Length: 164
Image 1 (cartoon, rainbow, N blue to C red):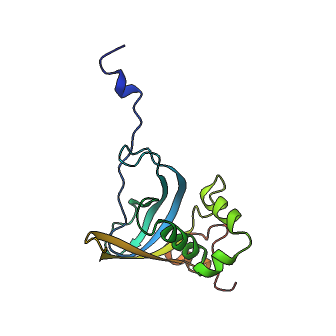
Image 2 (tube, rainbow, N blue to C red; image 1 turned 45 degrees about the vertical axis):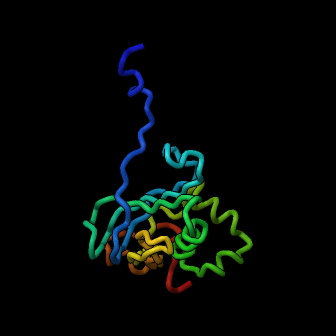
């Protein structure tokens, strides 16, 4: 065994650009749910959504950024629910009441990746938690299929429509 073999088999964590405070139009590139591999939170459920910035008042178009939520953090389930509902163009209550709730989440985070290629609006603002730490709160809304051409894009399959 060589002295540097540990590097050959190492898992990379990657670096993430988090969503900055501001108003953004983001293209969903990939969604993932599973157990964290981060040594500080190994075994904790995580949700990661990777985006490409299409338009923003604070972030450079074309860069990648991510929404990362951990089960151990306050608001985890609600934050993920708010993202899915917002991207689909429905209220949180409508999503929760949908008889297909399980299959919708499976389609978003499973192999179907039903949100990939869709555009979403994100408003992100800094807030302080009760513990006094900074947090970037985010609200989500769809970019309707009729608006994609404004961003030089063709509407993704399944993109919400104003007409619906």
